[in-house]
Each structure stands twice: as structure tokens, then as C-alpha cells.
Amino acid sequence: MNYINHEQVAAKTKSRLIKNNILKGLFLAATMFGLIVLAILLFRIVTQGSEYLSFDFFTRFASRIPENSGIKSAFLGSIYLMLVVAPVSMFLGVGTAIYLEEYAKKNKMTDFIRINISNLAGVPSVVFGLLGLTIFVRYFGLGISILAAGLTMSLLILPVIIVASQEAIRAVPGELREASFAMGATKWQTILRVVLPTAIPGVLTGSILALSRAIGETAPLVVIGIPTILMFTPNSLLSTFTALPMQIFDWTKRPQVAFHDVAAAGIIVLMTLLIIMNSIAVFIRNKYQKRF
Amino acid sequence: MTTSVKPKIDVPEKEEVKKNKSSVYKTEGLNLWYGTNHALKNIELDIKENEVTAIIGPSGCGKSTYIKTLNRMIETIPSVKTSGAINYRGRNIFSKEYRVEELRTKVGMVFQKPNPFPKSIYDNIAYGPRIHGIKNKKILDEIVEKSLRGAAIWDEVKDRLNENAYGLSGGQQQRICIARCLAIEPDVILMDEPTSALDPISTLKVEELVQELKKDYSIIIVTHNMQQAARISDKTAFFLNGEVIEYDSTDKIFSNPSDKRTEDYISGRFG
Image (cartoon, rainbow over all chains, first blue to last red; front, side):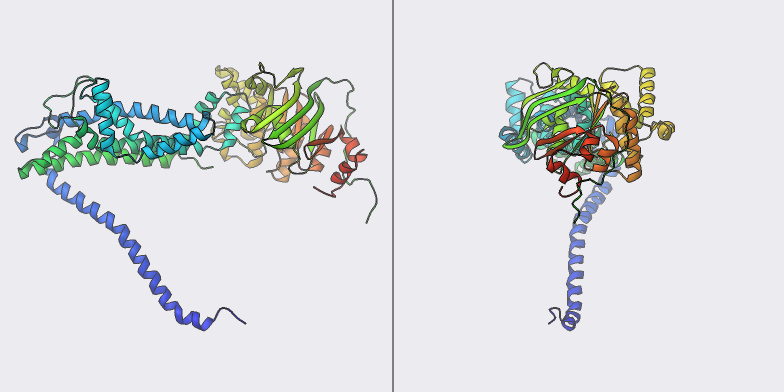
């Protein structure tokens, strides 16, 4: 008795292959959807904004006249914002990950913390904005400043950095830690000399991707009350500022069509910044990632 | 069916063991639990210096647990509880004032799987001295050369000290790990099945190395391989179900064991 009827199999092969090809096409279409939309977006923005893009665009402040508009204050504002966000979020994020993975005892409490950090990653950015407004701007009295916005943004991207760092630290093989402990190293020496150097590509990749999210984020800045137009550059951490996404947001709201093209130019700058950061992340991942 | 009680393993002739060597490790009434699992039961062992002590026994008999207790590496497992005492050179390693970092500088360990750091050969060997505060490049150079020579791998790697240790073969990696262990200038070297991941030729090299090393160090080696225990050790302890069944000179264990279970194990009737 044969269970496989070879004649029937032969008769059905064609329809099975057709099904296979249809699905292949469907998945290809799904892949192309995102790519095509992105390509159209890029094309539109570049054709719209390129005429406003020049060296002067970076050295001029915002203006009532589209031709005289620039992103000096917004561009510098975004850079200053990053100067606060990068060290604060990386120190807090990597520190938390080290504590949870290396020092904390594995018990219900750490499990609870772990789960809540993942949950925190899902909190909408507007909510973080409100938190920043309440705590940093008002309670700590930092005002509508780079510091207040930077701390808020740090909180926003902290969960992402923590989770990415935790994963990178967890991927370091236990045998390496054992080897270090067996030679009389302390926990901190082991972390500093073995765990972190091995985990650093993963930590950096996650952190850079998180930072690029912070640079493009608008909602928390709106809630904190960051101005959209500023005719000066910030001179201290406590001075007020504006950032690229805020400036772009303002230009797109204007009735004059010409400002929409200026916005497009701003978007080109912002996206170039993001692409550069993401490329650095990919580069680090490919170059330094170690396999075990 | 043969009724011969003579085991088939030959023990090579060894130089006469000196009578009054002092103990490095004196284990007294050691018990160890993993949670509720009683893994080591009333272990009594007196391990002498400048000898190779082999620990044999079937899987799960507690031999790896025991050797990891000797440098307290077992404490990395949270559910472990111990009672009794292990005296290393007369000091109880479980006492509160004995810091593990101090103990582990005197007692080096080589693991089952070669585990070099993903660093250069030089940095691997210099790791131990560096964590113990040696920064002088000249001294580090000397330690690296001395340790690599000690582990009989200097000639193979002296021209590529700055290459990543991962580029070496498994056997070379294991000797790098032994060299790394020598670099902290230990008194005792613990080896937890150091050749189980190696090919026969690399195994032979490590075994020859062990013979060389016992002149300066006390070596405790866990092995699955009874021939290996017979070839390289002076004393052998047979573990079964968390107990020491028999502990005696290797000659005695392999030629005339006093316990039936030891005899059954070394003649291959179980395990």
C-alpha cells in the first residue's frame, strides 16, 4: 500500500507552483510598497527643496521672505540638543543595562523592572513631552531650555538604548566572564575589560539609532513649548532654542506655497543627518561585530 | 565472560612520589547543594602540592562541581549552598575575610572549552597581570614571554602576538588559556576537562605540558578519560553520586582498587 500517489502528485504540481509564484509576487509587492513610497517622497522633496539649498541656507535665520530663510538657529539647536541627549541617554541607558544584566540578582523585582522598561518604549512621545514639561520645565525650573528638552528626549529614547544594550551585553558569552573571574578580576574589571569591549558594537548601534530618533522627534518639543522661529542662536544650556523638526513644521503651516519648498529644503538637511547617523550605525555593526 | 579483576589500563612508571609533601587543599566535610539537589556529600580530600591529582567519575557525579568549588567559581550559580570547609594552605576559603579575588589569583583555572578573550594573543596573556595592577610594558613583555614559554606555545605564536587569539586552532587556544593562567603566577592550576574539546594530537601536547607544569605547580584535573588520568596523574580520586568512593595513588587505583565500584568503573562496566 502506497500512501503517496505519484500520478496525483504530478497532476497537482502545476497548481502548487502557480500558488508559489503568486505568493512570491505578493511578498515582492509588499517589499516594493515601502521602497516606492520612500522613493517618491525623496524625489518630491529633492525637486521641491533643492533650489533653496545653499551654503547661505545654513547661515541665515528664519525670515518672512522665503528666499531669505535659513535654518541656522534650528540646525545649531538640533546639534546642541544632541550634545545633551547623547551623553545623558547613553550614560543612563548603558548604566541601567549593565546593572540589570551584570549586577542585579535575578529575581521578581528585576523581572518587573525589565518588563516595565520594555513597556516604557511603547509610551507615546507626546506623553514624554508632558512629563518633561511638568518635571524639567516647571518643577525643576529649567524653563523652555536646551537642558529641559534634552533631558526629556533622553527619557524618550532611554528604553530603546537600555533594551539594545541589554541584548548586546547578554550576547557576550558567559565563558569570557568566567575566564576573567577565574583570574581574580572583580566584576567591574570584567565589565570594563571584557564585557563592554565585546558588547560595544551592539550598544553603539542601538544608541545611534535611538539618537537619530530623538533628532527627528517633534511632539515632545511642541508640548514643552519650544518656539518655532528664533532669531538668535542659543548661548547656554539654559537658553531657549528651536530644532529642525520644529522649524520644518512651522514652514509647512505657512500659507505661502514658497515656504513649502523651504520646508522641503529643511527636510533634506534633516534626512541627510539621519541617513548619516544610520550609516554610521550600520558601519559600526558590520565592522566591529564579533561572532562567537 | 572474563572474570579477571585486572583492569586494562596501563599506568606508566612514575618517579617515586616524595613522602612528606605538604597539602595545598584539605577538604573537610564538604557538602554542596544546588537548591535541594545534594550534589556533593561529605567530601574529605587531602591534595598535596606539586602533584597531579585526577578526579574521575561518570557524568553528574559532582567532579566538575567539586573543582569549581576549589576556586569558588561555583558561587556564580545563585542557588548553590555549601557547608563544611576547604582549607587552602591552611585557610578556609569559605571564611568571610577570604576574598575570592585573592583566592583566584593563587588558584588558576583552565576550562573545558578554550575561552580566550576576543583580543590579541598578547592582551590575552597580559590580562591577568594588568588587572592586578601591572602597567610597566617591559614587565608585561617578560610575563607574556615567560607564560607562553611555560605553556609550550611561544615558538608557535611569537611572531604574531598582536593577532587575535580567535585565529588560532582549538588546541593552540587551549594552550593560550593555560599560558594566560600561568601569567597570574598561581600556586595551583585547576583544569576542568581541558582536553575534551581537543583532537588527539592537541590532547597529547596538553598532557605533556601538564607533566612539565607539575614541577612548579600543583595541578588538579577533572577528566572523563580514564587513560588520561592513568597517564598523567599521581593521585586519583573516584567520584560517584557526589561522594568520594576512593582516593589513592593512581597506581593503586588502576591496578588494585579497594572498592568494587571503582573497579567496575575503571574496567568500563558502567559510566
